[in-house]
Amino acid sequence: MEEDFDREIKVVVLGNGGVGKTSMIRRFCKGIFTDEYKKTIGVDFLEKAQFVDALQEEVRFMLWDTAGQEEFDAITRTYYRGAGAAVIAFSTTDLESFKAVQGWKDKIIAECGDIAMCLVQNKVDLIDQAVVTPEEVEAMARQLGLKLYRTCVKENINVTEVFGYLAELHHKKLQKGELSQQPAAAAITAPPGSAAAAAAASSGPAQSQAQGGEQSSEAAPVREGPVTVNLQPSKVRTKGKKSLKDKLTACSVA
Image (cartoon, rainbow, N blue to C red; front, side):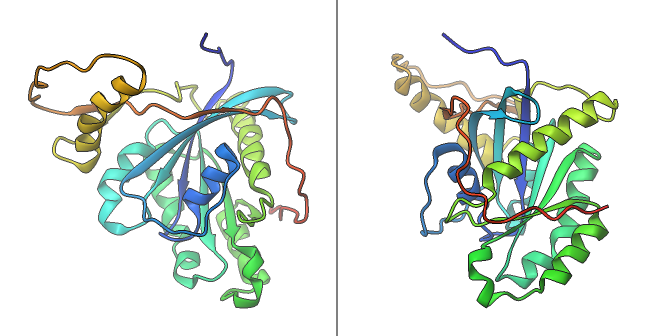
């Protein structure tokens, strides 16, 4: 039986390629980590229900992993729509990813408005290879007006805390009337001929087979106009389990 949730949030995870966006989402949703890097093509999608202490309730996070490369920009920006929260991530060892965070914030505001956001400095375990100082990072967080989290996805440090904070901030913005409550799992329309539309068309039969359905022998009709993309999430229930690691603290900014 499908569970009902009073609270659900669509979260987009933004940042340059290679900063650890996919690893962060997989760590949060599946509890796994791999050193192997594979470039995200367009977008990926996972779902997780997590108990949030500050709200004293379970929240369903609909997590959208977006490609950081410029060639996918037209596709990924389509998927920002309807987001209630965003993670803007950069890597401790990648100066260009740090310089790009202002641009990522501008993009999400242009598409979604002033939604719940935070800045994430990932790969803090590689601090001896850092290309930015702690003072520079904290100054950037103050400039953007965002709370800063220093994370290590490999060691699972501060990952859960990032999403818990976003859920709390999203709730506060809703109460103040700064956000509209939108279904996090709403269908998204992709431009015809785009990679996202092609992926949706090719994944349909596979999803039906995975759910035990019979694949029709008839060819799918060719549609004119926009294509609606419905991605099926991977669900992970945590039953209120909390992170055991609390080695780093968030940097609050005014």
